[in-house]
Image (cartoon, rainbow, N blue to C red; front, side, top):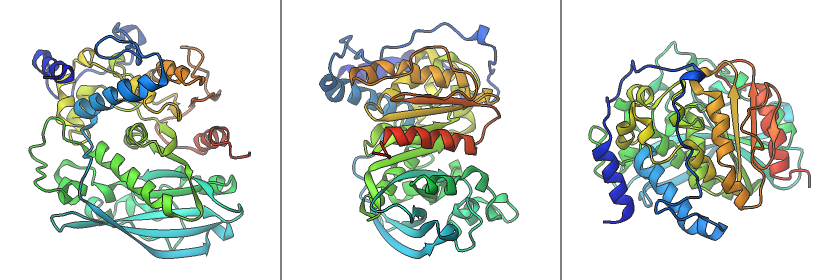
Length: 425
């Protein structure tokens, strides 16, 4: 048996867990954060320390990807057998009062079992720049029609499945405050969005209506220990969006960014860790299972998140409920998997549930891997003040307010991407 399998078996046998607990205690006191050791992301399981980028790419990086797959998000199938067909169903050359061309693209996913599902991509491309432009890829929560008041934006196909009549998801533009389309377009960025429910509905009893239903012998009621959860499935969907954008004649496939908020921030990080086509990976208020260090046990914790959202992660992650100290990795090592591409983490001062300090420290402790590539990480373990962004080869800011995406966040992201993608060269 290989060393990794031995480690995994030992952890599963030795962890004494209280099980998933929706009422597990939550800590908001820095004085009660338990002492724990920050694992060196450059130290392999056998103790060898990585000293070159070649060693990182060939040995440690695959080792970490495997651990996160088998113990947290689930293993992404290498071959799903799912075919994807794209059809442009609407194209408007003068959208946003002439600022952009709007394309709406229907994705049809078909499995070997003959089942299929459809998803709808909304793509805004700025009209002013000549040639190819960078693109920001980001899921939305309630459907494409809620991100804008533009009347010709088609309703996402999953809405009627997951949102009953009367829900805010039925209101056009309901989440438009989170989508700074005009700001991004004026800065020369295309923006692509899709409702995450289109890829897989965010409910345990609706998994059979998502991508998993297209796989042979999938059993939502009896998933294997390391079988992917919806975060893994949504991350897979991000990569399928990238597949399409690579073929879009106005998009620069070498300058794609992925952005996610909350659970979709967790998704963006996992997608960016796996798919190197995303040159900038942005996490907004992603918290537990995202950017925040799990072992700090501050705000939302593994027990709470696995109890309330058992479908997000693989079943193996449940073994660390109320026992984060047994995790053989932490989230700073997820962020390190993005190097040498650019990672950005954003927090909100009032969003204690997402542990802003833990989000910052996670990015800080990913620094050794960035340093290995000759890049600059965060310079200090002390977080910056509110509204004082730190932009190096990685970026961070904390703003006032709570769990949301604001124009200020977008402003910071665009400033960072301008430099990271060298947009003005």
